[in-house]
Length: 314
Image (cartoon, rainbow, N blue to C red; front, side, top):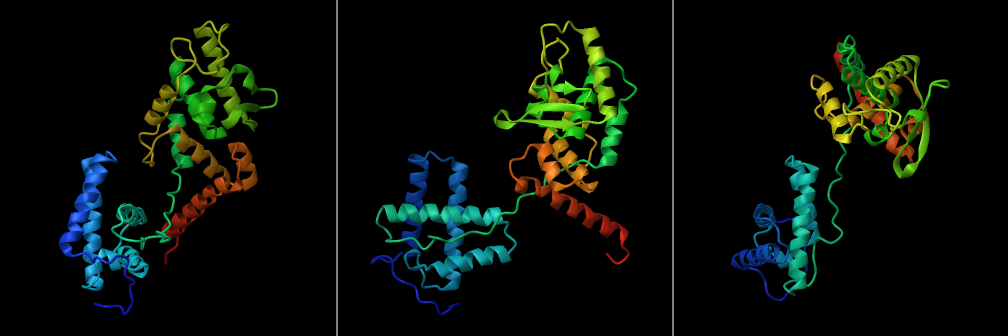
């Protein structure tokens, strides 16, 4: 089919099908020898270019790589989107074509690239995952009867993540004097050493006191300022906290099971219970309100799910 578009000629020599594949081979040799790309990546590039050549021949059988106009590239992008290609896939194929034409222009095979200033589809960021409040209650209650040091410590760590929204790095760097039981606040040192104060409730205060009492009876803590210790009496390491959270969330609804999911859970729970966005921003230590706004989308999505489940005509 022909769309009635006139295409400028970029080079004096027109590509035949054989020339096209010859240039692909030269291009893949370049990726292999000069860019040191893996064979798998090179194979993906090659497949993208072959599919592109099939597309332009479907648009106009007389078209070659040197006579492709940018309107054809736009049609190619639209065609892929209409066929259900993901935005990330379309952008990857556009990137392949940009690299190929850059290779062709650098070697004087074509005079200019038709891919210049062609923008791919916007990739939507996935919403952060979070654990439902009912699931978090079940997780925190499941080991409530266990009174050994590790169980009490782990339960306290989970509660602290869930009730304050702090980051993993912030939690493991907490010291004893960062807790002010009189005011019910926690001093947290975040990114770029920026400090913030986070309030906590009486129940978490009781958990922290119980843990610290058990810890002090278990270890000689005179030489350590660390709040959370491992079983050898040293500051608990990052990987250990990560794994204990992952283990605790194994039965939850989230795919990714990490301390950061509990940070998302804190923010989502706050907004679902009518906290102001600006207040949540300060508690999380975000520099920009735009960073915090993603959680508004989560709460809206939650409302949509409730609507679907509850409304008879949904």
